[in-house]
Image (cartoon, rainbow, N blue to C red):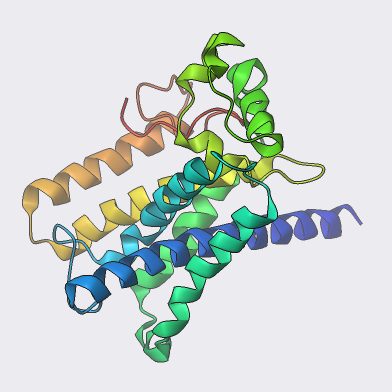
Length: 250
């Protein structure tokens, strides 16, 4: 029975993470399709700073969603019906360009990007506690965004509310009824995109500086997070729940 519960928990974790990842991915794809439409460029051929665009889709999606919610919060709470309607309408842009050719492009690299990397970083979801700052102001601010439109001068209520980031708006719509683990997944999606970028640098071999720098960062991050007597020397990925997006290089 215990083994069955463990497998059930693992499956639920990966399925939930994958669904949130798809939301960010397709929001980013909608944004990219919009840009390519206005600039009349082919989404398959163009690269962003030499990077395959699909690697950056989740990052695009994160910023698009956050900015949508900031604007929407001027008139309504972030969890209102209007918020979800705007998100669905923007997601519908994906239907204007449906390409099933990607099924023929499943490669070893894509397995690394979308299976191996998530499996590794999601291990952090099974042993994580709340961060001190979560109770101090992050969750309080997110709850305020969920229940009210923009409050002018909120910093006068509690000063940390004045230093909150875009992440508060994004996280505010991912609260679950009995768990806040989705907030951790948001940060992990950013981390996944970061590691996909590093792996892309290693595989392309077009730039030795980026290649060897990426190898060093990956090795350093593994030692910093999983090594003996971990001290978090600057690439602390698996921080506690409820804090801002996990640090990459700080």
